[in-house]
Length: 204
Image 1 (cartoon, rainbow, N blue to C red):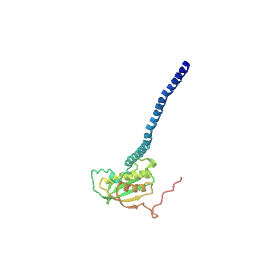
Image 2 (cartoon, helix red, strand yellow):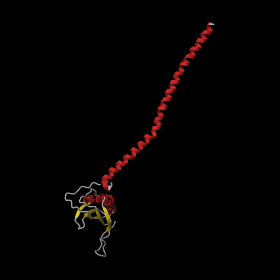
Image 3 (cartoon, rainbow, N blue to C red):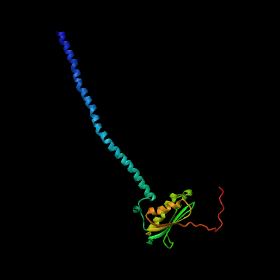
Image 4 (cartoon, rainbow, N blue to C red):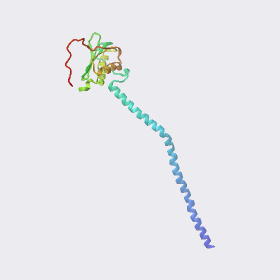
């Protein structure tokens, strides 16, 4: 009988640790489940956070574009900063003459009588060498000359284009982009009617 009682005690002691171990297992399972439940809301919020990041990334290039637009003068006509000239002549109507050669682009703005109220060239705007004849140089030159003229009150202009250079089209477009109302565009390139003897042909 004594041996049977000792065996029963040993069996109960072995069962007791097993019973004590079960709550620990349950706690571990609960802990494992808890982070999963905490991660669940994060997973739900993840798409919203990704959307916000995407919006921020999209907003940053837009700001850069606005900065470049201010530098290049491509902003809206209402936002163009025009400073009044000291000797303001109050000229509302004028003529924009674009002389575009193979090597340079020169833009001059005059009143109806031919008095110059604004001018610019590719060299004045910092272009050197072969860049002076590019279409981008023509755009920058035209914007600079037109802003000078707008300081004297210019609002309406006629464009006269002269020469075969690359900057002629971009310069004409830039006049309207700055905010001046363009009434007409004329090509006044001088064409000889069998006049002077032409220059000797280049040998390339």
